[in-house]
Image (cartoon, rainbow, N blue to C red):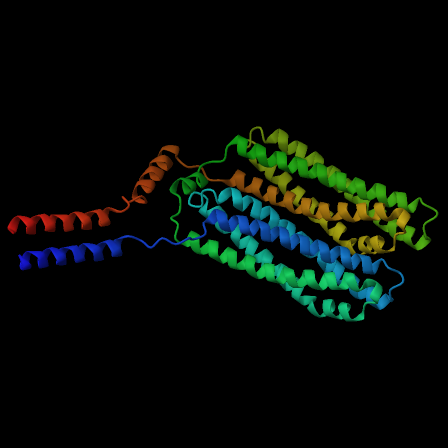
Length: 397
Protein backbone atom coordinates (compact mmCIF):
# COMPACT_ATOMS: atom_id res chain seq x y z
CA UNK A 1 0.00 0.00 0.00
CA UNK A 2 2.88 2.34 0.93
CA UNK A 3 4.65 1.54 -2.33
CA UNK A 4 1.45 2.23 -4.33
CA UNK A 5 0.94 5.57 -2.53
CA UNK A 6 4.56 6.49 -3.19
CA UNK A 7 4.18 5.82 -6.91
CA UNK A 8 1.07 7.97 -7.14
CA UNK A 9 2.81 10.76 -5.17
CA UNK A 10 5.70 10.73 -7.61
CA UNK A 11 3.36 10.81 -10.59
CA UNK A 12 1.38 13.66 -9.05
CA UNK A 13 4.60 15.60 -8.43
CA UNK A 14 5.69 15.03 -12.03
CA UNK A 15 2.32 16.27 -13.25
CA UNK A 16 2.62 19.40 -11.07
CA UNK A 17 6.13 20.16 -12.40
CA UNK A 18 4.95 19.69 -15.99
CA UNK A 19 2.01 22.00 -15.40
CA UNK A 20 4.26 24.70 -13.93
CA UNK A 21 6.63 24.44 -16.87
CA UNK A 22 3.96 24.39 -19.57
CA UNK A 23 1.61 27.07 -18.26
CA UNK A 24 3.01 30.55 -18.98
CA UNK A 25 3.21 33.17 -16.26
CA UNK A 26 0.61 35.81 -17.03
CA UNK A 27 1.99 39.36 -17.03
CA UNK A 28 0.72 42.56 -18.54
CA UNK A 29 2.64 43.55 -21.65
CA UNK A 30 1.88 46.57 -23.76
CA UNK A 31 0.55 45.77 -27.20
CA UNK A 32 1.55 47.53 -30.41
CA UNK A 33 -1.74 49.44 -30.27
CA UNK A 34 -1.01 50.62 -26.71
CA UNK A 35 2.42 51.92 -27.68
CA UNK A 36 1.02 53.58 -30.83
CA UNK A 37 -1.45 55.47 -28.65
CA UNK A 38 1.37 56.63 -26.37
CA UNK A 39 3.44 57.75 -29.36
CA UNK A 40 0.49 59.82 -30.56
CA UNK A 41 0.20 61.59 -27.20
CA UNK A 42 3.95 62.22 -27.07
CA UNK A 43 3.97 63.64 -30.61
CA UNK A 44 1.19 66.04 -29.55
CA UNK A 45 3.26 67.04 -26.51
CA UNK A 46 6.29 67.81 -28.68
CA UNK A 47 4.16 70.00 -30.94
CA UNK A 48 2.70 71.84 -27.93
CA UNK A 49 6.19 72.41 -26.49
CA UNK A 50 7.47 73.81 -29.82
CA UNK A 51 4.44 76.07 -30.08
CA UNK A 52 4.98 77.32 -26.53
CA UNK A 53 8.62 78.17 -27.26
CA UNK A 54 7.57 79.89 -30.49
CA UNK A 55 4.92 82.11 -28.89
CA UNK A 56 6.96 83.09 -25.83
CA UNK A 57 10.08 83.97 -27.82
CA UNK A 58 7.92 85.95 -30.25
CA UNK A 59 6.53 87.96 -27.33
CA UNK A 60 10.08 88.92 -26.32
CA UNK A 61 11.17 89.72 -29.87
CA UNK A 62 8.17 91.98 -30.47
CA UNK A 63 8.68 93.94 -27.23
CA UNK A 64 10.56 97.10 -28.26
CA UNK A 65 11.21 97.99 -24.62
CA UNK A 66 13.57 95.00 -24.40
CA UNK A 67 17.25 95.46 -25.26
CA UNK A 68 18.01 94.57 -28.89
CA UNK A 69 20.66 91.99 -27.98
CA UNK A 70 18.13 90.12 -25.86
CA UNK A 71 15.54 90.28 -28.62
CA UNK A 72 18.11 88.91 -31.09
CA UNK A 73 18.84 86.04 -28.71
CA UNK A 74 15.11 85.29 -28.44
CA UNK A 75 14.80 85.49 -32.22
CA UNK A 76 17.50 82.83 -32.68
CA UNK A 77 15.54 80.45 -30.47
CA UNK A 78 12.28 81.48 -32.14
CA UNK A 79 13.51 80.53 -35.61
CA UNK A 80 14.54 77.09 -34.37
CA UNK A 81 11.12 76.64 -32.74
CA UNK A 82 9.55 76.80 -36.21
CA UNK A 83 11.71 73.86 -37.26
CA UNK A 84 10.74 71.99 -34.10
CA UNK A 85 7.07 72.62 -34.85
CA UNK A 86 7.48 71.25 -38.39
CA UNK A 87 9.22 68.11 -37.12
CA UNK A 88 6.53 67.59 -34.47
CA UNK A 89 3.80 68.02 -37.09
CA UNK A 90 5.41 65.24 -39.14
CA UNK A 91 5.56 63.06 -36.02
CA UNK A 92 1.86 63.69 -35.44
CA UNK A 93 1.03 62.57 -38.98
CA UNK A 94 3.18 59.44 -38.67
CA UNK A 95 1.74 58.54 -35.27
CA UNK A 96 -1.82 58.91 -36.58
CA UNK A 97 -1.02 56.50 -39.41
CA UNK A 98 0.74 54.22 -36.96
CA UNK A 99 -2.39 53.90 -34.84
CA UNK A 100 -4.33 52.69 -37.85
CA UNK A 101 -1.66 50.16 -38.85
CA UNK A 102 -1.14 48.92 -35.28
CA UNK A 103 -4.62 47.38 -35.32
CA UNK A 104 -3.00 44.54 -37.28
CA UNK A 105 0.77 44.68 -36.61
CA UNK A 106 1.45 41.37 -38.34
CA UNK A 107 -0.16 42.30 -41.66
CA UNK A 108 1.29 45.82 -41.51
CA UNK A 109 4.72 44.93 -40.13
CA UNK A 110 6.75 46.37 -43.02
CA UNK A 111 4.79 49.63 -43.14
CA UNK A 112 5.01 50.05 -39.36
CA UNK A 113 8.76 49.48 -39.38
CA UNK A 114 9.17 52.18 -42.04
CA UNK A 115 7.08 54.65 -40.01
CA UNK A 116 9.00 53.86 -36.82
CA UNK A 117 12.28 54.54 -38.61
CA UNK A 118 10.98 57.91 -39.81
CA UNK A 119 9.71 58.80 -36.33
CA UNK A 120 12.97 57.81 -34.71
CA UNK A 121 14.85 60.06 -37.12
CA UNK A 122 12.40 62.90 -36.47
CA UNK A 123 12.62 62.58 -32.68
CA UNK A 124 16.43 62.47 -32.82
CA UNK A 125 16.49 65.57 -35.03
CA UNK A 126 14.06 67.40 -32.73
CA UNK A 127 16.20 66.59 -29.70
CA UNK A 128 19.41 67.66 -31.43
CA UNK A 129 17.99 71.04 -32.49
CA UNK A 130 16.66 71.59 -28.98
CA UNK A 131 19.98 70.71 -27.34
CA UNK A 132 21.81 73.05 -29.71
CA UNK A 133 19.76 75.90 -28.18
CA UNK A 134 20.38 74.78 -24.60
CA UNK A 135 22.90 77.52 -23.82
CA UNK A 136 20.86 80.22 -25.59
CA UNK A 137 17.75 79.30 -23.62
CA UNK A 138 19.55 79.47 -20.29
CA UNK A 139 21.21 82.74 -21.26
CA UNK A 140 17.79 84.15 -22.11
CA UNK A 141 16.50 83.25 -18.64
CA UNK A 142 19.39 85.14 -17.02
CA UNK A 143 19.32 88.31 -19.14
CA UNK A 144 15.62 89.07 -19.73
CA UNK A 145 14.13 92.02 -17.86
CA UNK A 146 11.53 91.34 -15.19
CA UNK A 147 8.75 92.29 -17.61
CA UNK A 148 9.58 89.25 -19.78
CA UNK A 149 10.74 86.86 -17.08
CA UNK A 150 7.60 84.71 -17.35
CA UNK A 151 8.13 84.26 -21.11
CA UNK A 152 11.76 83.22 -20.67
CA UNK A 153 10.87 80.77 -17.87
CA UNK A 154 8.11 79.28 -20.04
CA UNK A 155 10.62 78.75 -22.88
CA UNK A 156 13.03 77.08 -20.46
CA UNK A 157 10.37 74.79 -18.97
CA UNK A 158 8.95 73.82 -22.38
CA UNK A 159 12.43 72.98 -23.68
CA UNK A 160 13.25 70.70 -20.73
CA UNK A 161 9.85 69.03 -20.88
CA UNK A 162 10.29 68.41 -24.62
CA UNK A 163 13.68 66.82 -24.02
CA UNK A 164 12.14 64.31 -21.62
CA UNK A 165 9.27 63.59 -24.02
CA UNK A 166 11.76 62.93 -26.83
CA UNK A 167 13.59 60.37 -24.69
CA UNK A 168 10.36 58.56 -23.81
CA UNK A 169 9.15 58.66 -27.41
CA UNK A 170 12.37 57.02 -28.63
CA UNK A 171 12.04 54.38 -25.89
CA UNK A 172 8.51 53.58 -27.04
CA UNK A 173 9.66 53.33 -30.65
CA UNK A 174 12.33 50.83 -29.61
CA UNK A 175 9.74 48.90 -27.59
CA UNK A 176 7.46 48.58 -30.61
CA UNK A 177 10.40 47.56 -32.77
CA UNK A 178 11.05 44.80 -30.23
CA UNK A 179 7.44 43.62 -30.50
CA UNK A 180 7.65 43.57 -34.30
CA UNK A 181 10.92 41.63 -34.29
CA UNK A 182 8.99 38.67 -32.89
CA UNK A 183 6.13 38.99 -35.39
CA UNK A 184 6.28 37.00 -38.66
CA UNK A 185 6.10 38.86 -41.94
CA UNK A 186 2.63 38.67 -43.45
CA UNK A 187 2.73 36.66 -46.66
CA UNK A 188 -0.33 38.29 -48.17
CA UNK A 189 1.10 41.76 -47.55
CA UNK A 190 4.34 40.80 -49.28
CA UNK A 191 2.43 39.33 -52.17
CA UNK A 192 0.33 42.45 -52.62
CA UNK A 193 3.49 44.53 -53.06
CA UNK A 194 4.44 42.45 -56.07
CA UNK A 195 1.18 42.79 -57.97
CA UNK A 196 0.91 45.17 -60.87
CA UNK A 197 -0.34 48.70 -60.20
CA UNK A 198 -3.88 49.35 -61.37
CA UNK A 199 -5.33 52.40 -63.08
CA UNK A 200 -7.10 53.16 -59.79
CA UNK A 201 -3.77 53.34 -57.92
CA UNK A 202 -2.33 55.73 -60.49
CA UNK A 203 -5.49 57.83 -60.30
CA UNK A 204 -5.10 58.20 -56.53
CA UNK A 205 -1.57 59.57 -56.91
CA UNK A 206 -2.52 61.87 -59.78
CA UNK A 207 -5.44 63.27 -57.77
CA UNK A 208 -3.15 64.02 -54.81
CA UNK A 209 -0.69 65.74 -57.15
CA UNK A 210 -3.45 67.91 -58.59
CA UNK A 211 -4.70 68.93 -55.13
CA UNK A 212 -1.21 69.82 -53.90
CA UNK A 213 -0.53 71.86 -57.04
CA UNK A 214 -3.69 73.85 -56.37
CA UNK A 215 -2.65 74.36 -52.74
CA UNK A 216 0.75 75.74 -53.80
CA UNK A 217 -1.00 78.25 -56.06
CA UNK A 218 -3.30 79.27 -53.21
CA UNK A 219 -0.32 79.75 -50.87
CA UNK A 220 1.51 81.91 -53.39
CA UNK A 221 -1.63 83.97 -53.94
CA UNK A 222 -2.06 84.44 -50.19
CA UNK A 223 1.54 85.68 -49.82
CA UNK A 224 1.03 87.99 -52.80
CA UNK A 225 -2.16 89.61 -51.45
CA UNK A 226 -0.99 90.04 -47.86
CA UNK A 227 2.36 91.55 -48.81
CA UNK A 228 0.55 93.84 -51.26
CA UNK A 229 -1.67 95.07 -48.40
CA UNK A 230 1.44 96.06 -46.41
CA UNK A 231 3.19 97.66 -49.39
CA UNK A 232 0.12 99.78 -50.20
CA UNK A 233 -0.31 101.02 -46.62
CA UNK A 234 1.34 104.44 -46.48
CA UNK A 235 1.06 104.57 -42.70
CA UNK A 236 3.65 101.78 -42.51
CA UNK A 237 7.34 102.67 -42.31
CA UNK A 238 8.99 102.68 -45.75
CA UNK A 239 11.66 100.13 -44.78
CA UNK A 240 8.96 97.68 -43.75
CA UNK A 241 7.05 98.29 -46.97
CA UNK A 242 10.24 97.69 -48.98
CA UNK A 243 10.77 94.43 -47.13
CA UNK A 244 7.20 93.36 -47.91
CA UNK A 245 7.72 94.39 -51.55
CA UNK A 246 10.74 92.11 -51.88
CA UNK A 247 8.65 89.15 -50.73
CA UNK A 248 5.72 90.32 -52.88
CA UNK A 249 7.80 90.25 -56.07
CA UNK A 250 8.94 86.70 -55.34
CA UNK A 251 5.33 85.65 -54.72
CA UNK A 252 4.57 86.50 -58.35
CA UNK A 253 7.24 84.01 -59.41
CA UNK A 254 5.83 81.41 -57.03
CA UNK A 255 2.39 81.92 -58.51
CA UNK A 256 3.75 81.39 -62.04
CA UNK A 257 5.52 78.17 -61.02
CA UNK A 258 2.37 76.91 -59.30
CA UNK A 259 0.31 77.70 -62.39
CA UNK A 260 2.69 75.54 -64.46
CA UNK A 261 2.32 72.75 -61.91
CA UNK A 262 -1.46 73.00 -62.23
CA UNK A 263 -1.25 72.64 -66.02
CA UNK A 264 1.10 69.67 -65.76
CA UNK A 265 -1.08 67.96 -63.16
CA UNK A 266 -4.14 68.43 -65.37
CA UNK A 267 -2.29 66.71 -68.21
CA UNK A 268 -1.26 63.90 -65.85
CA UNK A 269 -4.90 63.32 -65.01
CA UNK A 270 -5.74 62.93 -68.69
CA UNK A 271 -2.83 60.59 -69.39
CA UNK A 272 -3.47 58.64 -66.17
CA UNK A 273 -6.65 57.19 -67.68
CA UNK A 274 -4.37 54.81 -69.59
CA UNK A 275 -1.03 54.73 -67.73
CA UNK A 276 0.27 51.73 -69.63
CA UNK A 277 0.06 53.46 -73.01
CA UNK A 278 1.10 56.89 -71.66
CA UNK A 279 3.86 55.78 -69.29
CA UNK A 280 6.73 57.58 -71.06
CA UNK A 281 4.80 60.84 -71.49
CA UNK A 282 3.80 60.78 -67.81
CA UNK A 283 7.41 60.25 -66.76
CA UNK A 284 8.50 63.33 -68.72
CA UNK A 285 5.86 65.43 -66.92
CA UNK A 286 6.90 64.00 -63.54
CA UNK A 287 10.49 65.16 -64.12
CA UNK A 288 9.27 68.63 -65.16
CA UNK A 289 7.08 68.89 -62.06
CA UNK A 290 9.86 67.75 -59.72
CA UNK A 291 12.07 70.50 -61.19
CA UNK A 292 9.30 73.06 -60.66
CA UNK A 293 8.72 71.95 -57.06
CA UNK A 294 12.44 72.29 -56.33
CA UNK A 295 12.45 75.78 -57.85
CA UNK A 296 9.35 76.81 -55.86
CA UNK A 297 10.88 75.56 -52.62
CA UNK A 298 14.21 77.23 -53.37
CA UNK A 299 12.63 80.64 -53.98
CA UNK A 300 10.51 80.30 -50.84
CA UNK A 301 13.44 79.30 -48.65
CA UNK A 302 15.46 82.24 -49.98
CA UNK A 303 12.79 84.52 -48.44
CA UNK A 304 12.75 82.66 -45.14
CA UNK A 305 14.65 85.34 -43.22
CA UNK A 306 12.77 88.21 -44.86
CA UNK A 307 9.42 86.66 -43.95
CA UNK A 308 10.40 86.21 -40.31
CA UNK A 309 11.82 89.74 -40.18
CA UNK A 310 8.50 91.03 -41.53
CA UNK A 311 6.63 89.27 -38.73
CA UNK A 312 8.83 90.93 -36.14
CA UNK A 313 8.83 94.47 -37.56
CA UNK A 314 5.27 94.81 -38.89
CA UNK A 315 3.19 97.29 -36.89
CA UNK A 316 0.17 96.02 -35.00
CA UNK A 317 -2.12 97.31 -37.75
CA UNK A 318 -0.47 94.89 -40.23
CA UNK A 319 0.40 92.06 -37.86
CA UNK A 320 -2.36 89.83 -39.27
CA UNK A 321 -1.02 90.26 -42.81
CA UNK A 322 2.54 89.45 -41.74
CA UNK A 323 1.39 86.38 -39.80
CA UNK A 324 -0.66 85.22 -42.81
CA UNK A 325 2.41 85.52 -45.04
CA UNK A 326 4.43 83.52 -42.53
CA UNK A 327 1.80 80.77 -42.17
CA UNK A 328 1.27 80.48 -45.92
CA UNK A 329 5.02 80.16 -46.51
CA UNK A 330 5.41 77.35 -43.95
CA UNK A 331 2.32 75.58 -45.24
CA UNK A 332 3.67 75.79 -48.80
CA UNK A 333 6.95 74.18 -47.74
CA UNK A 334 5.07 71.19 -46.28
CA UNK A 335 2.83 70.96 -49.35
CA UNK A 336 5.84 71.02 -51.67
CA UNK A 337 7.40 68.12 -49.73
CA UNK A 338 4.20 66.08 -50.00
CA UNK A 339 3.85 66.90 -53.69
CA UNK A 340 7.38 65.71 -54.33
CA UNK A 341 6.64 62.47 -52.45
CA UNK A 342 3.51 61.80 -54.51
CA UNK A 343 5.41 62.45 -57.74
CA UNK A 344 7.95 59.86 -56.62
CA UNK A 345 5.17 57.44 -55.71
CA UNK A 346 3.56 57.91 -59.11
CA UNK A 347 6.85 57.18 -60.85
CA UNK A 348 7.23 54.02 -58.76
CA UNK A 349 3.69 53.00 -59.62
CA UNK A 350 4.44 53.32 -63.33
CA UNK A 351 7.55 51.15 -62.91
CA UNK A 352 5.88 48.50 -60.72
CA UNK A 353 6.57 44.97 -62.01
CA UNK A 354 3.64 42.74 -62.93
CA UNK A 355 3.08 39.43 -61.15
CA UNK A 356 0.99 36.40 -62.01
CA UNK A 357 -2.11 36.60 -59.81
CA UNK A 358 -2.48 32.83 -59.57
CA UNK A 359 1.13 32.35 -58.50
CA UNK A 360 0.84 35.16 -56.00
CA UNK A 361 -2.33 33.73 -54.48
CA UNK A 362 -0.90 30.22 -54.17
CA UNK A 363 2.32 31.57 -52.66
CA UNK A 364 0.32 33.55 -50.14
CA UNK A 365 -1.79 30.55 -49.23
CA UNK A 366 1.18 28.22 -48.76
CA UNK A 367 3.04 30.85 -46.76
CA UNK A 368 0.15 31.43 -44.40
CA UNK A 369 -0.25 27.67 -43.80
CA UNK A 370 3.39 27.22 -42.86
CA UNK A 371 3.41 30.22 -40.55
CA UNK A 372 0.50 28.96 -38.38
CA UNK A 373 1.50 25.85 -36.38
CA UNK A 374 -1.10 24.37 -34.02
CA UNK A 375 -0.69 26.24 -30.72
CA UNK A 376 -0.29 24.30 -27.49
CA UNK A 377 0.12 20.81 -29.01
CA UNK A 378 3.25 20.07 -26.96
CA UNK A 379 1.43 20.90 -23.72
CA UNK A 380 -1.48 18.66 -24.69
CA UNK A 381 0.86 15.78 -25.54
CA UNK A 382 2.69 16.12 -22.21
CA UNK A 383 -0.53 16.05 -20.21
CA UNK A 384 -1.85 13.07 -22.17
CA UNK A 385 1.40 11.26 -21.55
CA UNK A 386 1.16 11.84 -17.81
CA UNK A 387 -2.43 10.58 -17.67
CA UNK A 388 -1.37 7.55 -19.71
CA UNK A 389 1.36 6.81 -17.23
CA UNK A 390 -1.06 7.14 -14.31
CA UNK A 391 -3.50 4.73 -15.97
CA UNK A 392 -0.73 2.22 -16.74
CA UNK A 393 0.60 2.20 -13.18
CA UNK A 394 -2.91 1.93 -11.77
CA UNK A 395 -3.59 -1.16 -13.89
CA UNK A 396 -0.25 -2.71 -12.84
CA UNK A 397 -1.15 -2.20 -9.20
